[in-house]
Length: 375
Figure 1 (cartoon, rainbow, N blue to C red):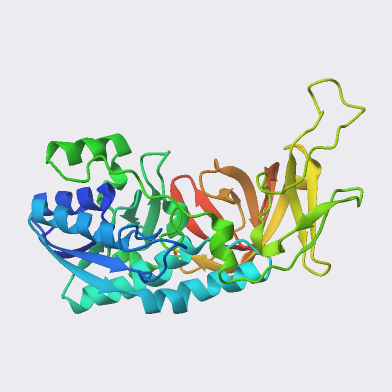
Figure 2 (figure 1 turned 135 degrees about the vertical axis):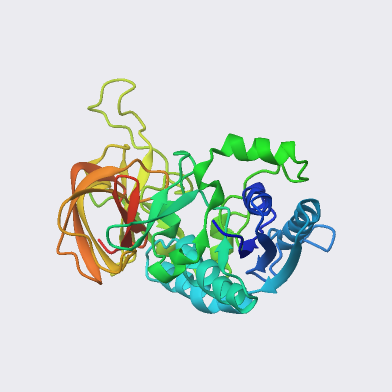
C-alpha cells in the first residue's frame, strides 16, 4: 500500500491504539480523532466532579491522548453529540417505546463512525479512515466490489455491527487489527509500552456505561405497568412497561417459580422464567418456564430496512445468519429478498429471535448485509 494520510478513530482503548501504531509503523501519515458522542452532563444520581458518573468520555480522552503521545501522532477532539442524538439516540428511544429491542451500536457505526467521522476525516485531507474493529475488507476482483469479512479472531469478530456499511464507506476504511487475535493486540500494546495495554474492554453503549439499563431507560421512557402472564393465561405479577424487557430475558422479572408437579425431580421443578412475547395491544408480558420452551424458538423470521453491502440483495440460496451478536452462524435459506426486506428460514430453530435486533447474512466469511427483525 502506498503511503497515505489516514485518520484513526482513537477511543482510548487498546484496539484503536494498536491500529494507529500499526499504520504509523507502515509509514503512513496518521492523525488521531477522539469522538465524543454523549455529553458529560449525563451523570448518575449523587455523582459529582470527583465521581463523574457513568459516561467515561473524559477519562477515555486522557487515555487516547496518552496513546497518541507514545505513538507520536496528533490527536483532535471532535464532538458528535448532536449528530448522535439526532441520528442514533432518537431512533433508539422510538424503537424501545414501540416494544422492540434495538441495537444502537449498529446504527452508530453507519451514521456516526462511518459517516459523520468519515466526512470530517475527508475534510482534514484523509485518504482513508481506520478503526479498531475486528473485521477485514477485500476487493473482489471479479466484480470490483469491496467486501466486508469477519475478523480472524472468531471470539472478537465485529462484522455483525458493521453490516450496514456501503461500498463508498468500505472503500475508504481500513481495519488493521482484523488480521490479528486479541491476545496478539494486547502483546503489541505491551511491547511498545502503551499506557492502556491492560485496559479492560468497554462493554455496552457509551452513554449507558455500567449503570443498570432499566434505570437509564426510566429517565426517558415512562413506566406503563401491565400484567405478566404465563402460557395458560395465569397472571403471575406485573411488569413496569414492555419497553423495559427483551425476549429471552431471565433476570429482573420479579416472579418466582411455579412447581411442575408432573416433572421428574430436578428436571422441571421451579424452572426459570423467560420473557417469550410482548403483546403491545394489551400491554401484556408473556413468560414461559424453561430455556427450551417452544415459544422461545423460531424457524423463520422477516426483516425490513435491509442494507446490502454490495448494493443489491443476494440471490436466493443457502446461506448463514446471526440474529444476535456472539451467536454461532445458523444455516438458513433467504427468500423474497429485495432492497428493503427479506425472509429467512432456518434448518434448526433459533432461540429468542427478537424484533428490533438485526439479522445479518453471511456467505462463509463474507458479510452480505442484513436487516431489522420485525417478526
